[in-house]
Image (cartoon, rainbow, N blue to C red; front, side):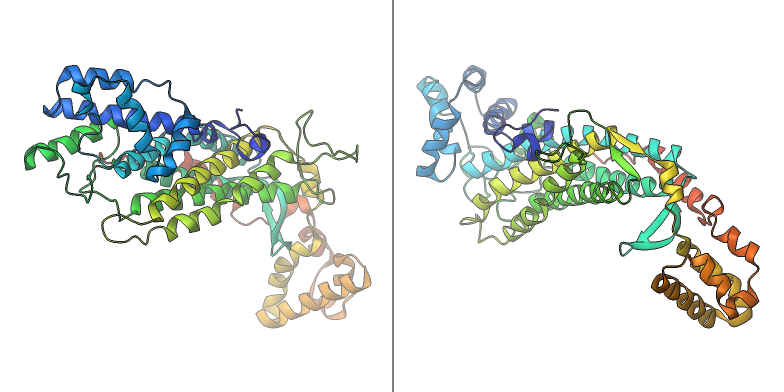
Length: 452
């Protein structure tokens, strides 16, 4: 998997989605936007074909990212110096049709939508692989018993198949959200204050220009300019934050399952997971790196939502404040999902350890169920709670404490207790049903997206 480079890129900037947010990638999106705008003008007849051909040639690349960035301070964004640099490659007759009718924010916003769409395509590739791996785990381990854990304490038994199926529904859910958002990422074209006054087109021509620009970029056509109504950004941020959160949740579980004291899962990846000082260590590095990447997302999402508060027709700082958080959010979400794919590809499931680790007290609810007809629900619950507490305090097995308790022993047959506490006969409720439902939902074709 590729990384975005730098000292921390291999850990926090992993994967194709992260790579598509680089300075070079953003600059290319700016050039692509200028080219698409020129083609749109040609399509509606507001720019001559010869001038547009020259603009397209000038937008093919070869610009110095550092130089454009250094010059961006004078105008407050990199579009101003980039337009100037493109103009230097054009004859005077063609410069009149470069950037025609647009303002810098039109180009920046459209370029960010292109960067987002390209990143989402890569992100979905990784999410699809993650979902496939989880579906395989859910199916393979449909009936393999594992301790259910609530509030980090042993609860009633479940199956690892249901654990994986739960992870799967989360991944399928964020894939659907990202797909919806990706299909509606809009172009931006409003000119200085959203009126497109800088063109010589009539109303019909202006509407046609907006439609042509959307078609040339492959982005959605907005009703009007969204310069100061930043819902496309917050919709994207929310979906990306959810994707990072789901990836982080799965990785967190993997890390907990991989603890030495639990050891029900482990990552097997030769050459990865060692310690600089402790030769015996086999750290779940991929899952840890998922968490490291995903933890960055909530703050970035919050910043993008804060920028939703804009002034009048164009924000004084809020729009500018979106650029790096949006790029970082695309990057860290892509990194988290890329690492999750790697973690699942290397995951080893110890079914025997899972079965043997089922806590006897996890059958306490079932024991209380046997006692309920004799004592009533509340009294049965209190009796089993008292026995479990005594077993913990005395360091005795739960089964021994049950048969030693006078009241419980009178009402329970020892054979019943043994059967209830046997992990091989653990009551996992309808876990299999829910695994099957998750797998069926995963296999179902996604709903058709409406054409924007």
